[in-house]
Length: 149
Image (cartoon, rainbow, N blue to C red):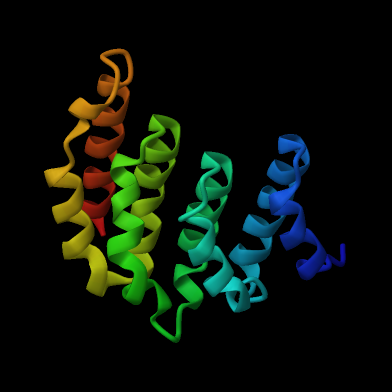
């Protein structure tokens, strides 16, 4: 199956979240096999500052999936910005960010210390009582996964 990465990338911003989610899944698969999405790192970085939490999440996801292709150390440059999303205003986005961190730590071992530190310091009291245990569990899981690396 031949994928037009440029067209698929544009679909990440589609008003229809199902369409955008399918594009995300397609690009994740592309990232597992090649660096064809890596040329969009600057746009992905812009996405994590977007007002729309779905777009932020898509950006966070694809940045993590590009960690193994990060020959220009672009993730190193934006890691502080990335780690802020451990405490994203939207707990769903925060949870996704936290779950993606072991991928970055695995492929960017030089960032492992920063990631572990940010996870350990994360103040999850900003979330509703119903979300706090979930976010806490995600943090513990990611720390355990990173510890295994």
